[in-house]
Length: 316
Image (tube, rainbow, N blue to C red; front, side):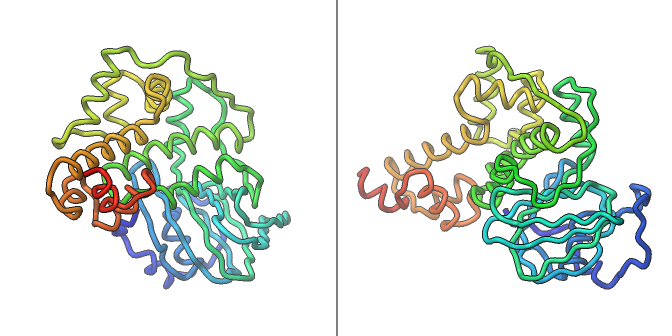
């Protein structure tokens, strides 16, 4: 999940905003990662971006007593461990909650509020552009508003688990990780629109899967060992569907999401190489696009409960 950041958020630590501007024009708002780095006085432990769809960052930070200024993106937070009191003041309104697994906090783009957090904590944050929400609304043929509500440690197990999975499931393989983040962004945006906007937004379940021809073409693209584009956008465009509908139809047809299908395919490739060739584990990891032998071993063990070396000995 780790990637070099395009800008150093610590640069923003030197700039302390003098005036709170709730109605600051969108073009003048700071990127969310930059404003978070200024307020939290650190950089994220890990961060992955998928321009222009959003970014996910994992932070560990100390106590916080500061004003979060208007940001360019919506920020959605989930908490992997612990229990921590949050205090949020927006104008004359005060919200107090407890950060813990199973709850989420939402800071809509452009809003500003005072935060008081008294102890160190860990948090996973999604930075979601308004354009992504509007795209999802268009894909599901909804006209309802995509304006998010402020939430402070609001109970939502579904959103919490989805966001925390970004920090827990990534495999250290750029191809798999990118597809996972793209798929996750669609799921999170859909969930936010359904549960955290001012109007009721419901999504009708997709009935039926992909046609045999379209499914075969999608699988051929996913199986390709060349430089074929296997982004969610490319898969959906090839199928003549939106990303939202492609994900649902693909799972209806195969029982797996596109990411889970590709991960299973890569595991089967790894097993064949380990069983039928003398290639080292390092070579297998590199051939399948993993960043390191340890990343490959961790991903292999999550799916098989065995290390690659132990599996090879047992299979030979």
